[in-house]
Length: 131
Image (cartoon, rainbow, N blue to C red):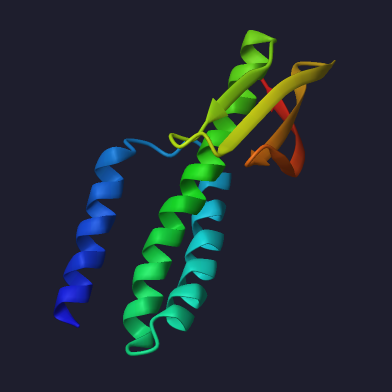
């Protein structure tokens, strides 16, 4: 248990060092959802020690959830400020985030963001980015 706790603390410190700032409340929400899903999945996968699986799954899920949310928010902001479409790809090329400005409303830009996995659309969002 002590090793598991030490691993969790080290992972948290590494994540903190890798991400010098979190730019949106949505990033926290993405981390929370990822942690919840990861904890449940980890507990189910690690049948010998469910607590270990839940903690490791929660840490990895939080990292993945925060990262995905942060990429989506940054791509939306970038598309709004540059007034042109923006694409981000995962390192393995299997995932893509595509954001494009579609309208202006007062001081805000409406941005549509599409999420692809293996070339297939898995999610579509609309977000307002205000100056």
